[in-house]
Image 1 (cartoon, rainbow, N blue to C red):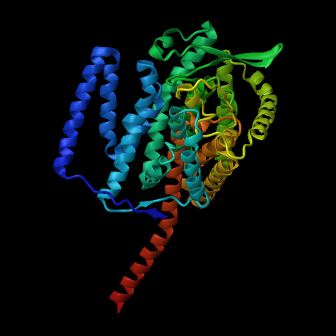
Image 2 (image 1 turned 180 degrees about the horizontal axis):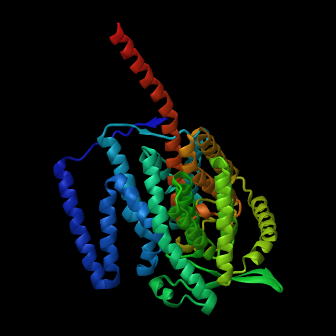
Length: 488
């Protein structure tokens, strides 16, 4: 399916004038920042540089990938306004540049083959817009719409970005290598917090954000463990956990595809970083992504043995540092049972014929949306029902089910080498879909970006693989015809 984009393009003179106007605006904003809050002036300059870079949409994708491991840093510098930097400086210019490039080249924008997911997404977008009329406030409605829809277009951007396997490979390399820094900080914070109850020198990093150490009691009675919650370069441990499993999956993809001691070490460090987040889901997610990736890639004895050895080494290392992983593991089954019962209860209690409107149960909308209301349902599907009714619930179920099936089908059709690269990413995305029954991780930075962007890249990889065989057959036929012609 394709869509035409009839846009009028600006002349070179207008483009030059626009660039000069933007440069002047940056100078004015930097000067105003220096006068009001000097510490935010570098942030203005950095945001302007990112926005300029993102006006070439392919460079914008690279800028987004490079920025994602450090999403919390603008908030550490400027507080709440820093939450807008990524969207204003990268995502919005990226979207504009993507559409502009399509119009300039007079081409249509190809959409990935999504089956029922595409009309379901269209229906859901209509429900989000219609839900504005019943939003708690205009601001809550706008924030709710942003949370639900703002990053879905990255599915199309990622689909066009990954023109060949090397594009996905380089994107994963950037994510895994940059992810080592947040992982190292998280491990350091975990050790410091376990030893002293605080973040020590790391606490200075958080500046205006107000991030403070949090300890979580896991278990009850005399059978419990204190788990420090670690945010690393993010504003919460949940956001860091989301990034940590993406970076781990990226390193695992590169390890399965390329092999090598370096990627094995990187994957182990990123797995330790995920565990250091203190998020209970990490103790399930890392093993599940690993096991599912090995199965989906085509199990090999060497990979299974290496995974078991790495897991044993990681458990031993963290135990020496004071982590009681065996106790955590023994408590997890009971926790999973309680969580599933609670999530099912939330879904049953949240079924609504028409919903309460956009942003009604969106955490960010209630926090920043000019409303005194306070509520929070963790189950993402229950949240969809509360805001958009049974039709909205049916739409998101159709989207996620269809997208999951498309990813699995695409993975099976890939050549072996491509399948090893893609398997951990498919495992990551499927795990994200399943855990939406527990909590709205897809609403939080940075999974809200990675989920749609990586899904688009994987669908593009599958398309290239499906086109490669017919193209190779056509080339062979053409070569044979040419040979016959010359012989004649």
